[in-house]
Every structure is written in structure tokens, then in C-alpha cells.
Image (cartoon, rainbow over all chains, first blue to last red; front, side, top):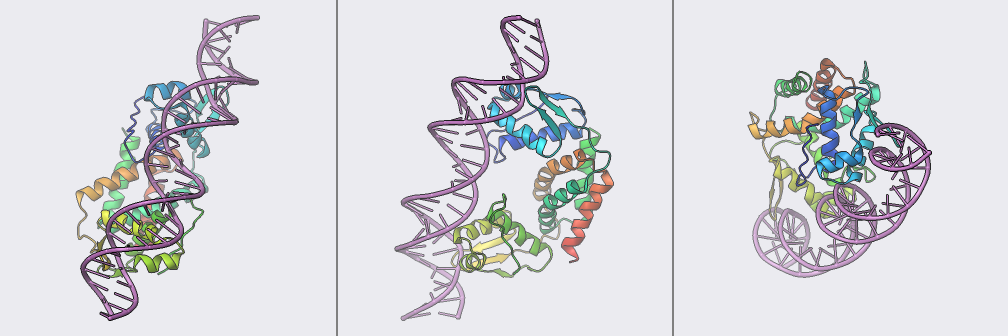
Length: 126
Length: 126
DNA sequence: ATTTTTGTTATAATGCTTTTAGAACAGAAT
DNA sequence: ATTCTGTTCTAAAAGCATTATAACAAAAAT
């Protein structure tokens, strides 16, 4: 499972890990019902602490993306057929400051939408 | 200047402040060449420390959005006619994990693009 | 059935970030 | 000449991120 952690990044390790797992799920390289590596083995692979991996898993669980089953392991949840309103609301709040920043950088509506479209393609057709 | 800080948020105060200033600039409620309040007066208005406001200002300066002039004040820079490649690259990197998350939540391409479009409208026509 | 592996929990230590506070400085603005 | 400005310094408190050990009980593997 191609995961790369940059210890010197200003993004916390557990967030880097969660983000890359989300990308793998979006790309369907990880599919619903697949099991994730145990926190101990993945921590060993990445050269980080068990608790750091555990924190990433629980962040994903809190977002409803995986289920952590005590004493057993972590399983990827099905991707909803239709997104929930709470998910959409959350994404709107998260996206808001980034869209504002793009505008302030001089990006046009089309430029922003093309960027988003390009990222969607990269994450679904790659 | 309608700025609202939530001290209990998990988003740092200086980031909340920077985000809201960026939104005000995107909405053209703050225009190029406008001066921002002094760090002391804004800190007093918001009930936070001078250094917290100063940190927000310097984050905006590092992003090229304002210029902090020593012993004088902070001024809003012009919005570039055309966005720089480095800005676009940075936004792409920042947007990547959020688009992935949206996909995993079951949002369709159109749903994501509509959300982005709606946020752009909200930030430019409001 | 026994051993291994699993997630959970607890404690502890370290370093970094965030926030606040107070003070002093020198240049700009009034 | 006075006030206001951003800058710099020191200091402290609180929280977060990361690592390290260790122990526990249940699931999985043998």
C-alpha cells in the first residue's frame, strides 16, 4: 500500500495518513469491506508510533469512512450511493476558506472549477 | 468590520481571523489599498492578544495578500489580474484531500462542482 | 487448546504550537 | 511634541503531536 509520510511536513503525521487513505479509497485502490493493516504493522512499515496510526484510523471512523472493530481490525465502509446532507454541509464549510483564497489569488470561476474537475478526474480515473 | 472569533473552535484564532479577512477581500468589502486596523485596535475589538492578530497579518503577508509596513500599518494588495502558477499549484495541493473526501462521502462530480460554484457565487456576488 | 495478534487503555516524557502578558524601542503619523 | 505603529524580547500557561512502555482481554491463527 503506497503510503509516504513526510515527518518534516507541517501537516501532522496522522492527518497525512488519513488523507492518503481517503485518496486510496476514492481511487478504489481500497474497496469497501477491505481490511486495513493493523495499527502495529502499518506503524512499523511507516516508521511511526502505533498511536499515531491509531489516531488516523479513529479520525476516519469519526468521519464514517471506516469501522474500527475492537480486537479485530479496521474495515472500509461502503461509499454512500447518495451523500448525506451533513457531509455536504461539512464539505461546504471546509471548502469555503479555500475558494475565498483562490479568488483572492486572482483565479477566475472557470479556473477554480477546472481545477476541481481536474482533481476529480485524477481521483476517479487514475 | 464584521469579524467573529470563536475561542472554543479547534481552528486557531489567528487562522480564523486570516480566513475571514480573505473572505472579506474576496467579497470586495475590503479593497486593494485599504488599510487594515492596527494590530492593537483589532486585538482589542476581538478580545484577543495583539500577537495573535499580528500572526494573522503575517500569514496573509506570506501569502502575498497584504503588505505589512513596519511602524505604519497593513495594506491590502491588488488582486492579480491573472493567478500565478505557484498559487494555482498551492491551491491544487490544498484542495486535493478535500476533493478526495467529498468523493468518499458519495458526492458526484456534479455535486462537487455545484458546491464549488455556489461558494464562488456566495463569495463574489454577496 | 495454545499461541499470536489485535485494538484498547494508561502513564509518562518530550517538543512544538497557540495564546496571553508585559515591557521596551524606534520610526511614522498627527 | 505626543501619540500610535509594528517589532522584538522574555515569560508563562495550556494544549497538541509524537514517541515509548506496558498491560489487558478478546479475536484470530496455529
